[in-house]
Amino acid sequence: MDEQFWSDHKAQNDTSQEACLLNIITEYNTIMYDKLACLTFSLGGEVYIQELITSAHPQRCLEVFSIDLKIFLTLSSWLEDNIILKQSRNHFSIHQKLAIFLQIVGKRNSNWDLQETFQYLGATISLVFYEVLATLLILHKKTITLPNASEPLDSRIADDTKYFLYFENWLRALDGTHLLAHLPSVIVPLYRNRKGWLSQNVLGVCRMDLM
Image (tube, rainbow, N blue to C red; front, side, top):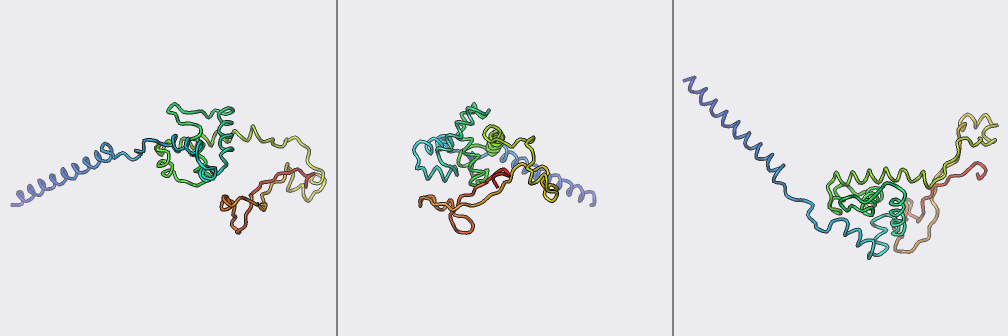
């Protein structure tokens, strides 16, 4: 009696394990091999960007890129002429790459938002972002004149023991401020600051003799 019971129990247990294993295999196969295509829009990001650049209203370009179209095109050309950023073999243009980067940093769009807009996989979007970021980090070396470390320290600091203690390696003074802005009505919302008035955020750097 006991032997028969345990024999039947083992048979039922084996059957349950086989059924469970079969369900796992079926689910894995569905996930890995029977995928439903997600990014199916045939035109893709290149058509979208070209239409935006060639025929869109300037305000629309400003909303999408967070910068003026003329600046966008100038920056694209500069990157192509001076830096290693080039069009990819799969016709991934510099305009597309720069647009993806600007939508992430300027509009705070998510990776998924950009997958839907440009019809590329998330890994590709991330790769493009870091490619443009690495490229732009080279930009300041070619466009900004940094202070010379050998420049003598201003006498107002060097001869004052109070200030010298804190500003021994001082080169320039740097600060940001908001300047009152007068703008066309179509772009007013873009320049309204957190205090409610219109302004342009400006970062200023100056030498001691200009202070």
